[in-house]
Image 1 (cartoon, rainbow, N blue to C red):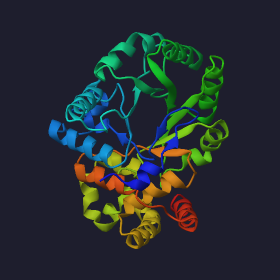
Image 2 (cartoon, rainbow, N blue to C red):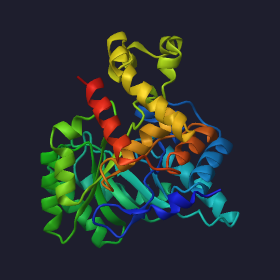
Image 3 (cartoon, rainbow, N blue to C red):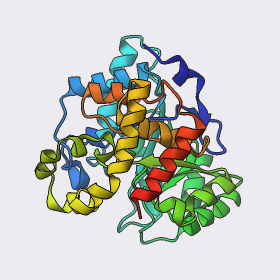
Image 4 (tube, rainbow, N blue to C red):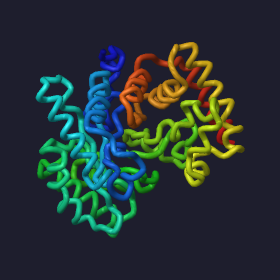
Length: 332
């Protein structure tokens, strides 16, 4: 059943006409195990993808985020296929806001224009509401890329422009350049959660607030650490690769440092009869007002239900501040 609170809490995405739910569905896991980054996930069955998307959209999410690099278009195609299925069923949720991304590495800005029809084809002919530069490293300047993106808006191929993994300086530059074409940079998709506050330290969050740019937070649960499962059952850490353990904060020292934060999440989870992960997501979408939206993934329908549940309540200001303090302590 759709969450009334989720329906009522739509917020503007940057300075655009798009109104989005605080949480959207991240679709990296629909890569079908293909491509450079798709192998991170197992190949989900079509029936599982359909159920994940159905549960997410019926539960109050109204947008999805995918990318060209997710299986070389496989994620976009899987998404289009299940949205076609929902449309056939007459679902009122078959037309969510769609965000996808262009992959810039070893390419020039001309590729933005040259590949857009392929993106639209993979998405089943659907309109791209938000088109993002996936990361700042390419063979072209930000100026060339923003010129190409502005051209796509003018041509009616995309509605709005976003970036991903941009620093405060790069984001501000992209925004300034787009303004020359009468456009605004709508969003910057970056890693952000209670155990990763880099954008609070390096000026990206402050610049986003000043310019009216939305932060789209990926990895909002720090690869599962903020669900509390690794603290509750440390034996699970052994199943995680050593590289991921070091990158995510699953080493012994980091785990000890983050324990008080996990304890605080658990206490609040008991109070609201939810999970620690849902508390962590709720903090993420409310602590910075409407600036931050997040894209948790889901590889099972139960994960989708849990994500939706994070929009069904609201932490008090005191609770938000308490978690903020616990977060900084964990990062010392």
